[in-house]
Image 1: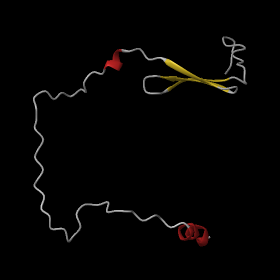
Image 2 (image 1 turned 180 degrees about the vertical axis):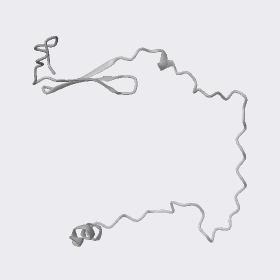
Image 3 (image 1 turned 90 degrees about the horizontal axis):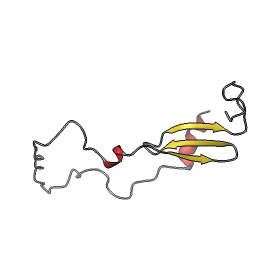
Image 4 (image 1 turned 90 degrees about the vertical axis):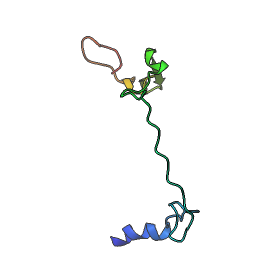
Length: 99
């Protein structure tokens, strides 16, 4: 059982990084000036600025296939409706419509 856990790491070892990915090495002697503090302005608010898309009404984009029909909103891409076209509803108000 141990072979199953160890063998993939032996056959497919992780790739080594090409260059340095961290900060300065221990032998680096280049001094960098301290970063300046960001200027604080009085126009900061708790809310993000209003976007022009916020005033637009959300629309539904339909994705269909022979098996299903999915509706996604243009605001956030959330799934708002899903229908299975191969199955019919048995509920009285929806009788005969896809599930």
